[in-house]
Image 1: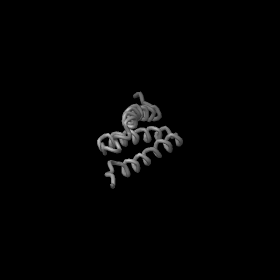
Image 2 (image 1 turned 180 degrees about the vertical axis):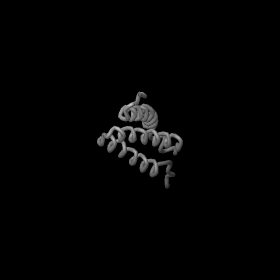
Image 3 (image 1 turned 120 degrees about the vertical axis):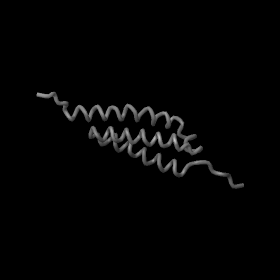
Image 4 (image 1 turned 135 degrees about the horizontal axis):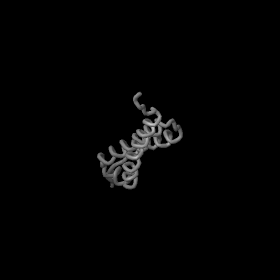
Length: 92
């Protein structure tokens, strides 16, 4: 009889890998958030969004509503912040 891997352990591994990749990427960008927004560093922003999406999916796979809501909210807020940010010229 072949050995089978329980689906729950596969989901845990995938969840862990998503969070293992997502948290460091997003935190590095968050540490430099203001320059990322002001200077319109879209590659950095895209990396942040990908990292945050991985985190949200990781928590979603575990069925944890609170971390999904918290990290998902930041994902939305960050999108608006970046969309409204950027360099502005002064009106004299």
